[in-house]
Amino acid sequence: MQIGVDCNLAVGNRRIFVVTTDEIARMAVQFMLHDEYETHEFGSLEAAEVKAGDWPPDLLIVGAELLSDHDVIRPEPVLSRFPKARLLLLADASIKSANGVEEIACLQMPLRLEVVRSAVANELL
Image (cartoon, rainbow, N blue to C red; front, side, top):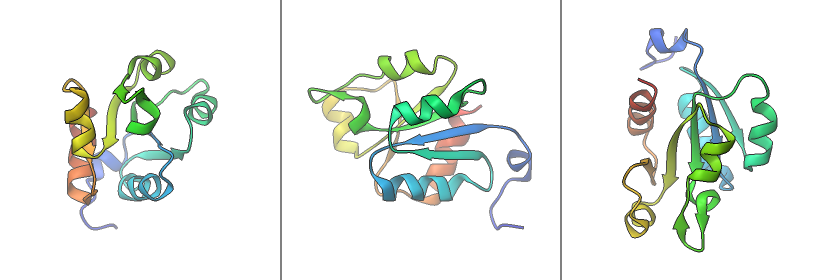
């Protein structure tokens, strides 16, 4: 039994994709969530789309670098690929505030276990 793991979440079948080019952040988020959710990590949106197949993710945690277009955060292309998934932005707080993207929830760096688990739980309600 892991410490701090909610058993109700651990037996649920929620699927999360962590997609970012930052390998360390990707692995850290996957490690923080793997006890409670089915969590997969990818370095590109194309690889995530292939894995989604017939069973798409419930939540996408996407690095800001994959959503930016000329320094403007654009979530629409990602949401069109995964229409049933919720979206969490993985970014530095300055990136989010500079782009004025307030409607997307954000996991801010540096990552902390309780913050990551809480943000994910709130998005999957």
